[in-house]
Amino acid sequence: MIEFGIGILAGVLLTGVVAWLVLPGMMLEIRESPYDTVEETCDRLADTIEDKGWSNQAVRDMNASMAKRGVEMDRPVRVVELCNANHAKAVLNASPEVSTMMPCAWGVYEGEDGNVYVSGMNMGLMGQMFGGTIAEVMGGTVAEDEEEMLDEALSRKANARSTHSLREPDASRGAPQGDGAMSDASTDLDAADDASHTAR
Image 1 (tube, rainbow, N blue to C red):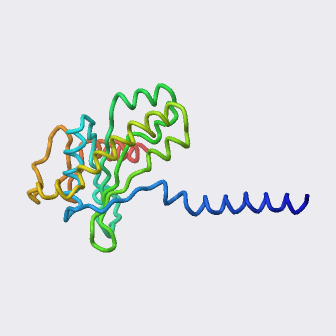
Image 2 (image 1 turned 180 degrees about the vertical axis):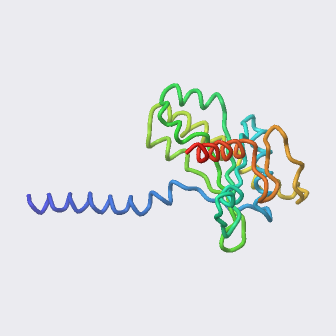
Image 3 (image 1 turned 60 degrees about the horizontal axis):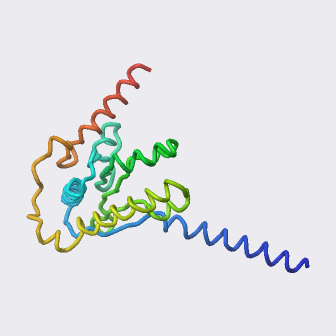
């Protein structure tokens, strides 16, 4: 009986260790971009988001934001935000506490090998962890939509259609062009942050 109990305990501990090691990697999905630069990749993602009926609320230039605080980053990093109002409403009506994880976003960055990568949360797995409406919306429809958008934006066919030149800034999105520019939403946040520091 004691040996049986020890065996169960060992199994539980082993499962916990495996989950601890494996889950972090499962929560993030990383794809290599077929485009040469972070900016080109962000442009293609932003266009695809809008084409699919979602909203690209901002493309946040993390390098420029850090530089305002006197911090220089080694490689370019951007955050591409995307939102679907109907999906957001369904989730927030059921579980407003998950607003801390919204809107959805993809990270776009240059890797150590010089190639460009796109990272995102594994929405299917995350939805399953929460269950209920979150599993139905975020783990279902949202996960499917994001997969479709990434497939299209980062496909070789899409790359072949690209002119390999940056498009003109879209005033409705405030898309950044290079390290010195920020989206409108990012600029507003930085301005608010500066004001709060001044007030203190």
